[in-house]
Length: 316
Length: 278
Image 1 (cartoon, one colour):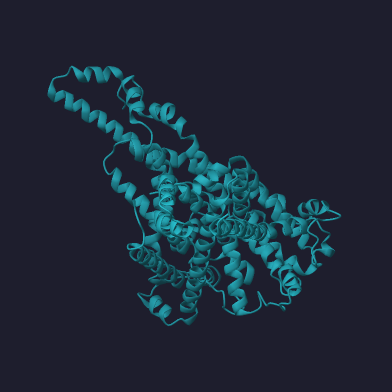
Image 2 (image 1 turned 90 degrees about the vertical axis):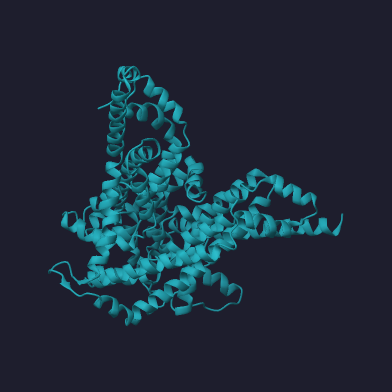
């Protein structure tokens, strides 16, 4: 039911009691309209995001291979996980990769953004912005493919140029340390563009009057950076850190494609474990338990980041 | 010139050097991929790599369609990404508008729940979604990828932010003139939402075009593979020396993203910064 202009006009000349009836009718029609508009989104999000969260927790209390009926296991999957060294090691591996990737992503993104903002000509800034953004246009899968060739120990281009500098055959993908470093480098290479764009925008929003006033007061480039620019963009640094950790803790594409989690289990991230457990070994209950654990770890990391940032982040 | 001036000039010069080196690092691997895709398969591993191919083998790009079903992968990616982008554009605009402009009981609570799901990682829901898709009989089909992604909390959040910035007086004026709620939405506000729609569409395109994990889990038949999954499956050609052809496929897969970037760079940037200014 919708209200027409005659309804509204009629409403205006009604005595008080039937005016509120008309108002209620109007409000109900608006509410109906509102509910109709959100129906599609609510259904999809509920069925495929909200309900599955609850379902994950439920499934983790069972042992299930999807083909035969599930058997109740209580918290057995969780106690099994706490004694499972492959899972625990994967959390550590993932954490190490994530911290390194996020730190480098923010440091390089911020450094490059500061340097690009320094350039005076708009054309130069535009060229650098485009170049640093390009790696983001490729998929993580594609990047893993060509990086695999570049980092190849015998035929890779990187080792070729390093050998010209006198550095020996680096076992990028064939040693544990090398594989870890390679994954970090590949991930950072691709994702620096993201933090770079973020920081360019944040630096642009620093009011120029502040910078000019400080320069007039005799501040050099270094104090300008640490006393004014960094504090003002600290919310963006926090945002980049939180998003970065959430994404990097779920690293899958690069280690799965580039190193297959190896050599051995050097680059086996938690999501690789979840994938193998649930979709290769068909242990859905145990896999759900690990994913619930990952969710809890992610929430803890995010909470820790917000708590730690309270003293350092400056909100305007 | 004072020492400060000299130092400042040197600092700026060094900055440029660093930027150029960083640009070479950023661009180098991509350039190598392009030039190697144009080399004959036999010489794709010779070093030093010729950064400018002397005898470009465009035949690699033809071979990639013959030797591997790249056309099939492309079509699948287009179907999946296209339908998801359209789906989210419609559903998120409708719900974003409602959360921003329409009053109904429980609006704040429902939206808060939406926001909560935004922080949920894919991992926490993938197993139950897999079970559900299997129960729906969609396992292995492209719809397994499409249907769960037809709407999203982030898209709704983005559209709502945009609608919130629009003046309410326009809608009120239209309603006084007798317009229905839906007419107000369609003729007054939806029209003004095009920039936000473009940003959302580009964000979704970038995200879903390059997806690997969900296709890996849900698709079994190679005929249904999307581009990233299909390309990775071909990596086994490494030893036979036809990496040029694989790399031709990689470049082809990148072309839609590059075209979109050239055409709508501003929306890419806006998509990245959209969530950060709270």
